[in-house]
Structure formats: structure tokens, C-alpha cells
Image (tube, rainbow, N blue to C red; front, top):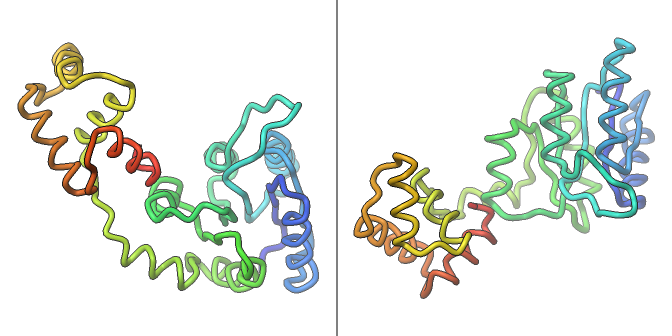
Length: 222
């Protein structure tokens, strides 16, 4: 089992619940806590400098803003910066986020090793997740795995994402066509842009551009 773990979680009760399980049930020798991403990263660097790096990072994704100005504001940023210091560290995300597209992107883009969605039984899942990750197998609860497999999320192409982002910025189709042309992005004709957007609206069952932007934002696709 892991010998040295860092927990980054701004909710005190959750933080302590995680630590209790790690120490009392899994008998992990050293568990350090941080309520802020900046503090967590300081601990990461110190551990590395002491030649005693953390083996596992357990982190939330969202951290509430307060009076302290923070350089690292989200769990995703903490994962990236931590991996720059300790490339082989394992990462378990412990978050309320439940959007399939978001969870998929965490495994694909951030190479996390496990995901637990906060809920009634999430702390009970922790012991199983830790054991599985330590053995080299990524962890995702059965319910979440079923949701990801059954979720028919339309995979946007890069060009589609560009169009949607520009629409969300308030640009008209004519303005988008002009910007694409100025940036040497092809295709850039108004007719093709209109066809692509109509196809995306159909896929997401959106009745208007405003509704489409709202849907793809909620799904975390832009």
C-alpha cells in the first residue's frame, strides 16, 4: 500500500474523513493535508526536495475562493503542476463533478488513476479505490462506469469546437467566417459554417443557437 499520500480538499469534514480512512483502515504511514492548491503544491515541492516524494495525490477539482489570493485555483492545474515535479505520482480525483464528458477528459487528458464522485457512499469507495490504484488498475465506480458507457455523447471535431467557442463569444456566422479566413482556417465559407452548426444542433436536439451553447457548456465540451 502507499506510504505517503497528499490530500488536497477545501472542505474540512471531507478532508478529515478521507484522512481517517487512510490512516485507520489502510494504515498509511504519512498523510498530509492541504486546504488550498498552492499549499498542496508547496508540500509537493518540499517532499521532492527532501527526496521523499508523495506516491499519491487525492484532490478535489473545485476550491472555493476566499480572502487568500491563489495562484493555482483548480484541481486540474494542481495535477499538471504536481506531475511536473513528480511525474510518476498517482492521482485520485474526489469531486462532486458527475458529467460523463468531464470525467472522460480527466482520464484522457490528465491521465488520472481514479475517480470518486462525492456522495453518500463515496468515503466507503475510497478503500477499494486505493487498493485498486496501488495494484496498477484505474478506478471508477460501477455506476459511473455504466453511465460513461451508456452516455451517447456526440464527439465534436476540432472545427466544431472552434465554431461553438466563437458563437459563445457572441460572433455571428458572418463574423466567424471572416475570422477563420483571416486566421487561414479552412473551411471558412458561411454556407459550410451554417451546415455544420445545423448538424450540431440536430445532434444535441437544440432549437436555437443559445440553447446549443448552453447544452455544450453544461456538458463541458467547450
